[in-house]
Image (cartoon, rainbow, N blue to C red; front, side, top):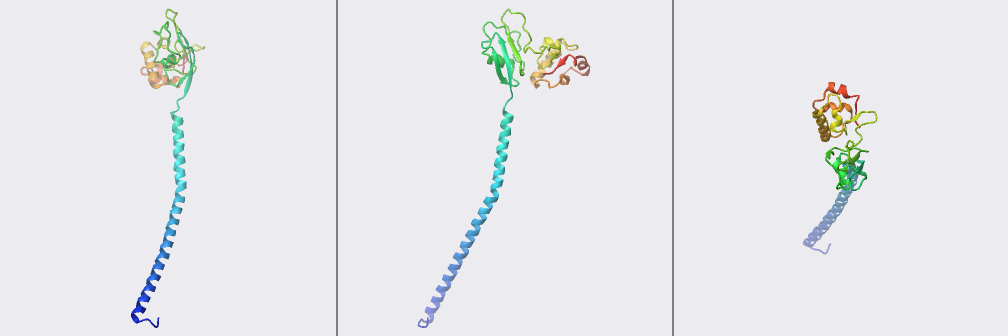
Length: 212
């Protein structure tokens, strides 16, 4: 240093100062980068439980939707003039037509004129398809007339409903139309929702009907 001129000393001092400044900048940058990375890791860890909660909620929702979408099944017995008589599993709300199709369809000698293909089915129904010229077949399904003499309003035909006091053919057809549009009656009281059947009519038939 003593042998350097004043100009050389100034250059040397400037270089030392620049080196110190650069070293300080590098140290500060490294610390800032580590702090930034630490913040990112903390944020990622704090977000993980939220992501898991959202994922679990989504899975639960999908499971519930799948359960809701799965239709309930019923079993019905198809007999008579069909190609494959037997017990068949169908979806709740299917109609007589679906049961006959499941049994391979009606055979060539079947008489379909008295069968209501649009009638809704329920569990344990029996569908009987008569042969041409056969005596009048039982109601389809066959369990409308109960052992105690009561009429099941969920499966009765127009003829069976017409036997009830105050229920003529017109109201009988309205009952059938109502259950085909809205599904089976859950209780006998629900029959009052059919147009033309009020409290007075219900009072006359309530002891003569069931809803199964």
